Length: 148
Image (cartoon, rainbow, N blue to C red):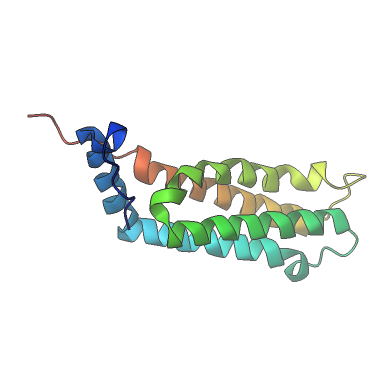
């Protein structure tokens, strides 16, 4: 799916058309599809993890994981449905992952999160941040064709 072409301005610039073509080609690659699916799964797991790992006395952490998990899953869904628009949002996954990583110490009132909760959030946060970097790298890391 591509953006509608405008009659003048930046939309007709040759480099702009090349960038759009490169982004569409990258977004339909197997790597991009795999990263999008993994982001969606990480978000769903982060949302349901309070009930999987039993965050019994940590209601603030439960709400934190639920909201972040739904947000991550929606970004993953958006990447799958409209990658040409959503790849610009992939950077948001990195701070979300970092927040998931540090949230057991920040969100809990007495810094009393159990070891299982801490390990859960550390793994999910690190995976989310890495998937965000991978999604960003799919478009930023591509080299241009050499000029002739």
